[in-house]
Structure formats: structure tokens, C-alpha cells
Length: 170
Image (cartoon, rainbow, N blue to C red):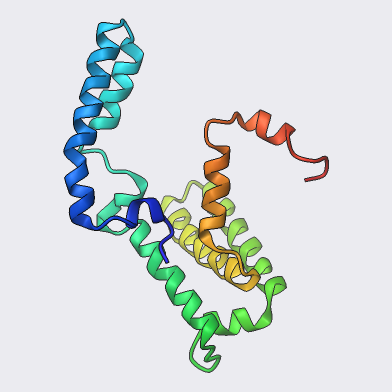
């Protein structure tokens, strides 16, 4: 199960085959934006098209594929718990309350490292936070695709508007 089914559902050759079409469409949009006086839109297109810039999911050839692997490992530990050899299995066995406590602890550690401006500390504690968040999701039967669907739902919505749309107390 992929965290990003829309990106991983097509075979690599299919994604590569589509790339020239997407690039051509981007070029047409860029030309249209420039011709129509949309300099800001053109600048945005150029900024997005720079191949040298990495995106969060492309770092070092890892990224979301690494998160997919992590999720698969957590699901494996949940399905076949070996608490003698697996920290994840032990944590899952303790249930959502303990998993939530660990998420809180790791989030606090990220904040402490950030407040101290310790970049490496933020990186390491963020890895711990992501791991424990995944374990919490697994303990509650939440699939990453559900969280990603919620992020997709919020895309393009002002944070102020989104928060105002929530029921009071949420």
C-alpha cells in the first residue's frame, strides 16, 4: 500500500512517458502567462520547473518510498507482533494511549530542538515523531491515505477559513 497512490500507481515507464506531455503543457502555460501579461504566473512556472530543486519526496532518492517502507514495517509488526524482538510491536501492544503519549513526547522534543536552533536535533527528533505518528495511526486503524485525503481536502483553503469551519471545540 502506497502512501501516495496517485504517484505510485503507474509503472515507472508510464510516469516517464507522461513527463514530456506534462513538460509540454507547462511550457504552453508559461508562454500563455507571459503573452497574457501574467509575469507572476510565469515566474511561478519557472520556479516550479527547475529540475535542480528537490522536492520533499525526492530527497536522496528516498522520500515517500521510504515512508511507504516504514508504514509496511509497522503494519507487519502489528500483524505479527513479536514483543521480544520489536519495539514497535511492544508499543502497539500497549495501545493508542501509550502511542499518543509517545507522539506528544517526540513533538515536544522537536519543539525543544527548534527553540534551541539545533538543526540536527530537529531532523533526528522529526524522524522519531514521524515514526511514532505512524505507530499511533496503526494502533487506531488509521491509514496514511486517510490523512493524505484530509490534506487534499484542505488544499487551496485558507487556514483561517478551514479553522473557522470546524465545530467549536475541535
